[in-house]
Image (cartoon, rainbow over the protein chains, first blue to last red):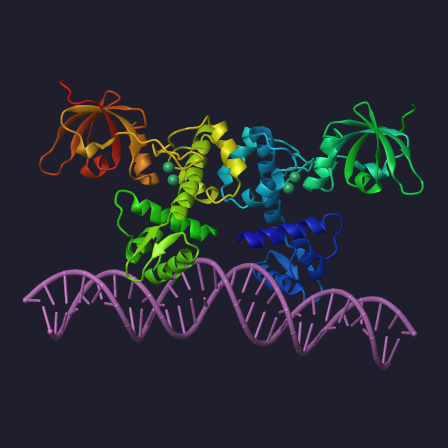
Length: 223
Length: 223
DNA sequence: AACAAAATTTAGACAAATCTAAAAAAAGGT
DNA sequence: ACCTTTTTTTAGATTTGTCTAAATTTTGTT
Ligand SMILES: [Mn+2]
Ligand SMILES: [Mn+2]
Ligand SMILES: [Mn+2]
Ligand SMILES: [Mn+2]
């Protein structure tokens, strides 16, 4: 598999999460930041190799093999991100770009040794699960901060958007994985929320709240 | 620069070591395991980018820029090889293939952090020098075992061939970097040699002796 | 059902990297 | 100086991955 093929397979896998529907050419083109015509060309090649099911005009769906490949690439991506943070002191907003390159390195031994070096981590620096050798990964019950009841409490366990801009914003407000967050209030008009994190009260927009995952620690919380 | 371009630049650099002459199309084709016609195409592109000097039928020579690039790739290659051996318990015959992939990862920060993690090593697992950030590397006075006087002594400091076949042969006979080797005898007929390593006497062919570097520890040695 | 809009595919082009076969240039020997 | 061999370049083809523009199919709306 070429780098490009692997990226497509990974893109399709991500779009497939949360829904068993076929992925449309347009949606995939948006995901891959390319043109629909390029997508059509590529999916024909991938279908030829039995990595996905494709019927003209009907979108695509990964085959069993395709899914296995996707999980391998995702495993590598997340292990490398973990390595960069744990062993090379990268910050969580710097790792994605480099991991996009490292995920294509082919060496089963390398991946498994890396896994061992890191002590078989279950989650990456963004809280995303790391598939094991067999593609199996842990799930965690987590809820978007925007969907939390008011008042309530939770621990930050992941981000939905892991763009540097968002992650740096979180850093500036001392929001990190493992941090306890108190949900104080929600504004009816714009759904912005007031939260408490590290002893500081903070007003955050609906967009921010919609990209932060919490593990609820109590159904409700009284001040 | 594409992976292929980087590989060509690296190939030219290696052929240029030990000689200021221009590299011929045929020699480069052999090095890159490709056809002369493919080489002609590629060197035109590289000349266009000012990575090398090229005059039709006259061979090529790296520019200053080309040499800098080559040293960067070589630095990465050797640092990754060191990482694989030091941190992931790879053996010295397993690292080259993976390093051929890893050397193309683009991230200055990654390379420098890796360097720090490994404590700024001067030499890779095969005894080859690792250029620093600025392309500067140490040299060591070393001599091919085949060129050592008889009798004499030295410490194994490098290999000329680092193919798995050769390295595994050395492993089987407990020859490793840092090992002390006594040169006992040379056979006039086939230039095979008798050496002592780790208390064991060993008969080795001229071909083997021509691929092992020693740092001489004494001009002569009396039994 | 018919038409317009949107989504998708096809056709044709291009750059990168390779190949084979043929042409051209350089080198070597008498 | 001429001829032969070797080296190098050119010409033309192929694969991968992309693009634009045009054609086709599907979807949504009267
Ligand atoms: Mn990532
Ligand atoms: Mn991640
Ligand atoms: Mn190597
Ligand atoms: Mn090496």
